[in-house]
Image (cartoon, rainbow over all chains, first blue to last red):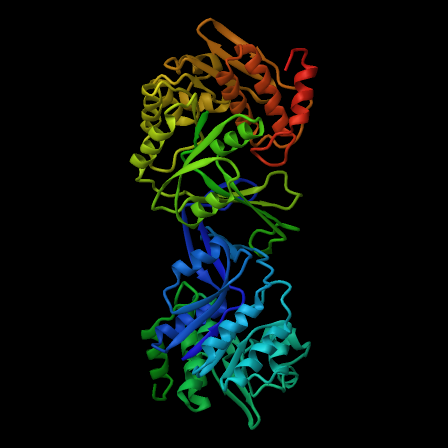
Length: 296
Length: 296
């Protein structure tokens, strides 16, 4: 069982317009709403892979109730008094970049309830994944506490956070960190990848995703690199979450690190082919693995 | 008791930004959410005036539940399967006009439940106000049916709708219609106000709001006009709803038409002073009435 904690979930709303005209009243042609947050994407991809996973998340208000009603994966929640945040993405097919509005989200005061939930669910778990941002005002050391809580329960940790939360995970000795290059440099203030990884030395393993340049795993024995699947175009949102899910599945299955990375790169590419974050094209995944000359 | 039907309520969300940059990810600094829809504004103003009023509305989904939890006026609902719509307004204080996104809203199939609710609540009522748009796809003749249902129950009707719904209310012989000039011309296709009112001849009384040019009541005996309160600047959204509420209160109180119009103009101006639709500045209202040389 992989437990996936999403500290800052959201209702991700997308408004499809015929033509986006800022400064005017815009009739929305089509609305899509989905539960969002990197950890939920990870849990969804694990479910698609057939891996036993449980999403944990704080939820509050009507937005929280909506998420609880819409989730199609196993989950458990800590109830919060604040209203879970919403993000709104405006797209009209013409703009190079969509316009996105991100609510600040609630100030969460119920971290004890989250720790209790985690305590209940870590028993017997194989891995804890912590993924995504913290709510505003939340102490980054919460991530340290969750990592230590997992270790005390005999559960390994994989953390995909950014900024101070990433540093906190390293300080607490997380088993695996998975920043992308930009997150790594921003969090550590380092000028290159190797220096950034060195600043996260408390962690057991640091896997850096480099987008089209593949992935690199920094172990005590050296650096293991895998290329990205070439020529894949589509929606990069959620590719990192698919790679995180694949890393988590590989760790739990006890696969060699090289094979785990190869699968993570292939699954990330298979996510790029899907228009929605948290989904993967499993047939393409198999093709990517097969064409890469190693057994799936 | 004034019963106010809002056929198409909404959650009105406002995102306050430091600077709105279309095509980018915008961090929202402050979020405000309120129950929206013209009928709810009317009911809120009636409550502020101390007039006994009951808001009726179809509600569905989490947005509907949010509205039910947030309303601070007496209300009763017909539950619908669809999700009540949301509107999102983006403001950063710099733009001349905010950017607004209006969801299409649910396709409501539960109009029988609305009619039942109306039937229960019309008993003993003094007036039915129907205010605001119909949900997409709704037959404008629903408005005719509600007007006839009220008449059968011995209850007068005041309708503030636009387009085909305004024409349907006239056809059914609504007691009072209250379009603004633009709505009047758009609904009737007329090129001037008098011709537009003539096209609504099925109604007992047509009150046309002219913004800064005041209001005009077209009766069988002629046209009664009142000027707007001069020099009032602020937020015109909701001014028409305040005027509608005032008209409703005057009708139920049996005031002379001239006094009713004078009050409606003053209350509309008092709404312009408030940043939020559905609110009125009651001290300013009293001042406006006093300075207009007639007893309040």
